Amino acid sequence: MTNELIDFVLVSVALLGIGIYGLSVKRNAIRMLFAVEIIINAANLNLVAFGRFLPHSGGQTLALFSIAIAAAEVAVGLSLIIVAYRMYQNIDIADFRNLKG
Amino acid sequence: MLEISSTPLVIIAILGTVGVLLPIISIARKEKDSNSFYAVIAFAALIASIGYVAYQFLADNILPSALFSEDVLVDDAFGGFFAIAMLIVAIFTTVGSFNYMRKKNYPAVYYSLILLSTIGMVLVAYSTDLVMLFVAWELMSIPTYVLVGFMKKNPSSNEAALKYFLFGALSSAIIVYGISLSYGLTGSTNIGEVIQGYSTLDPSLLPLALLSVGMFIAGFGFKMGLVPFHQWLPDTYEGAPPTITTLLAAGTKKAGFAATIRIVVLGMVVLNLDWTLALGIIAVMTMTIGNIAAIMQKNLARMLAYSSIAHAGYILIGLAVAPYSSLGLQGSLYQILNHAVMKGAAFIAVAGIVTTLAVTNIDKLKGLGRRMPITSLGLVISLFALAGVPPLAGFWSKIMLFGGALDAGSTIWWAPWLAIAGVLNSALSLAYYGWITRKMYFEGETEKRISEPKSVIAIMIFSIVFLVGFGVYPDPIIKFVEFAAPTISLGIMP
Image (cartoon, rainbow over all chains, first blue to last red; front, side, top):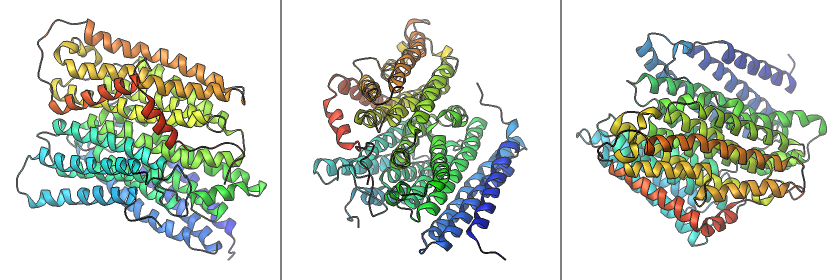
């Protein structure tokens, strides 16, 4: 087991890439929500890893804040998706076409 | 440490208490359909907050723009300026909702979310620490996701909310990633220390620093509606309840600019690269694409949404030339305040038209000037102010912005082109504003006058007085803007 900062950063960058891929390719609302969550968690991993290698714990504090806020955000997002599902029986955002122009 | 009587803390105390209490009151009261009761409480809280900010300014308790501080919040003139602009927008939204939310469900929750979102916007402008900025940013965003989807039986509102939520969540994820990078590079989350750390950075780490600043621009750019990140904006502004669109267009967008000025403009000055050209290119693209798309729209709300994209471009001119001319940032701040009033009034007029006539299609607005004279007059005045027609208030802020770009021309060759692009775009925007005016006043049968909602009339009269009054006599606002604008220039950094 290595314990180098660069390993954590590489994993975090890989997660960022997966998240951006998911957002740009997938059209299912829940999958897109997952992709956003993966990006937030990539950032959290970064913060915790940097905080581990710096002499103070500011990064870990911010990671805790960000986890709590992400939970609130997911709660709102899932409720919006549930309302959409009740209306359309479907959560494919390519099918939501009321607004365009 | 901040005093307990400092402006941001008092605003949190007033709006937070009222915002949390409103839903509790609504559970305790059995009575249904009491929209105006909650609206009056929310309105009183907002008036108290704006009164406190104004009192702090008049009593000279506010520091000149500091931009940096040891603390997480700083009670400076820059934050106070944005607080006033955003509280005006929140008041517009609340007063407009007197009429719009009548006979609709859950008024208490609606006003409570508006107040909580307003706290977030105000705190974004006051925060000098990235952790505080992120928390404030989310406090601003999460209530607006709910508010956009508030009409849950309406498919458009729901679709708008879902699109807004996905892009908004992405933008905050990108902001956290940018924060994590800048924290890793400089070992601090205080904005002043981050900027300081950037200026002494090892050259081999420079690409990472650029990446973090790029992520801040992208993250804030989603909310501001800059051009590569603007796809969600027209859909959301069209589908959302028009009162909430006021809050988005005039409020959350301005919070994005406040955060950008606090972090990006200064951070990029320190990184000492030719970044201003990139911002200039984004500015020109944003206003051109916004204006061209606006011309083709058939829906009034959608047209105003594209015009709001175009205005993000004008404001960005000031940020792009900020290091070369002090007029740049002053013009941006001036335009931000004016845009808050002009766009707020325009969208409240749309809300009034939607509730009384249930139309937003521009072709159906024929003869509106005779059917709803005061709403139409307010709409037309704010549209012409948006285009920058003298002697309305929008004219002076554009003069200041374009003057700043010309002034910067002595240092950098491309700055005058920004002013030229801005003038051409303003002329272009007159085309579609004029088209709406023509539909409202010169077409259609003579129809009978219908009664207009009183709350909308109140906002229209306020904005007509503001736009015409400060257009004829702009000195007080110009003094205020000069006091609030931070001075930055190349070479003089902390």
